Every structure is written in C-alpha cells, then in structure tokens.
Picture 1 (cartoon, helix red, strand yellow):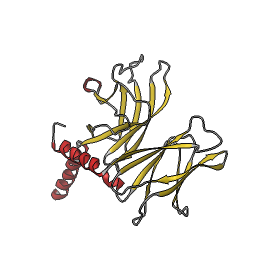
Picture 2 (cartoon, one colour):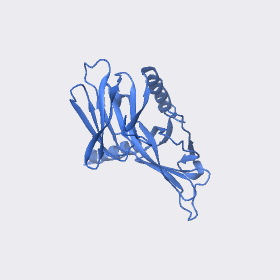
Picture 3 (tube, helix red, strand yellow):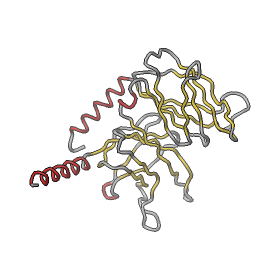
Picture 4 (spheres, helix red, strand yellow):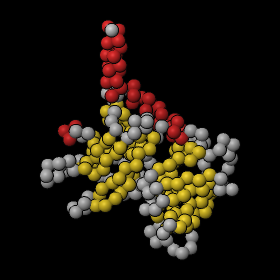
Length: 246
C-alpha cells in the first residue's frame, strides 16, 4: 500500500510539472493586421506583433488549452470586463501552435474582432510533403488533386485540413477547387500546385471580391517556409526551451 501511495504521488507531481511547462506559439494574420493586442494577466501583459505575410517570432505562455487576446491600451470595457478581441482554442495534441487570425465583424467603436484558426506548426506535422489548406470562404469547398482526380478533401468555412503528396511524387500537382453554391458544386479553380517535401506550406482559399462569370471564383495564397527557415525556427525553439527565463 505504501508503494502504491508513493507511485500515485509521483504521478501527481509529474502531471503538475507537465502543466507548468511553458508553451511557445506564433501568430499570423491573413489580412488586416491586429494592433495593440496582448495576452496574459493585465498587470503582466505580453504584446504580440505581426509580420506581413510571415509567421511572428515565438511567444511564451504557461501550457493551456485557451489563449485570450485583448486590447492592450484598453484592457477593460465599460462594464469592467476584459475587452476581448480574439480567443484561441488549443488541442492537447498540438505541440507548436500557429494562431491564424481571421478578421470578422467590428465593434460599435470600430474595433476589429478576429476568429482564430489553430494549426500545429511543428515541423513533423508537415513532414512527407504534407500541406495545410484553410477555407476562408463562406461556403464548403472540395479540393481535388492529381491528373485522375484521385484524391479529394472537403473543407468547411474557417476550417483547416491537411493533404499529403504521394511518396513518389515529383513536379507540379494538378489541383481543382469546387465551391458549394445552392447545393451544386461549381468549379472555382483549375490549376497546379508546386508542392515540396522539405517545406512548411499553408494555403489560404479566399473568396474573390467581385468574381466575374469567367476565370477563377476563388484565389489561392501561399505561406511557405523552406528547409533553412524551418531549421532556424527549430533551433530558436530549442534555445527558448533551454532558457528558463524565456
């Protein structure tokens, strides 16, 4: 009985130590750049900054499944509650969160609000030529890959899904996007992708502001890091984890 008690105490201590481990994350904005955003306790707030079309530097927080971002200059609203601009939910399975900020509506005072799509930015999550696709349209889309349309994935609005190229794939990849419109599927893009097995690629599927009757109905943006950038990121993360002061 004594040894069982000691073992249980050990498990509790291990779990508590794991909970206190810091988590490192990055932020990215798909269009409108958020300003004056902070997270953490108001009296010890940490400001986040965004890089245009690039991932931000790493930010640190105690391990958690939710991060709340608020207005750094005006952290409380008139009711004395936190002036929340965006919230991120983080699955326990995600090792290295990338928080993708997507603008939504504005408050009455003009403050821009954001939804956040959370990806696992760990380099292993992109291994083997895996890429992520984020649907920023208001409709469900179907992505069709290959010359014979042999691979399909379906993505709901504000959802991300992964696609992995075959192990023997070389060169470009035929790629189509179909968008749901009144229960019918319209061909929105018929083009090619140029995948890489050594990069970290995230594709954004955007609605066209004024889609005409001809041409693509959506546009595709790519955020990619090459092998050297990934290696540099991994080294930075190791140094941060070794540096107890953060």
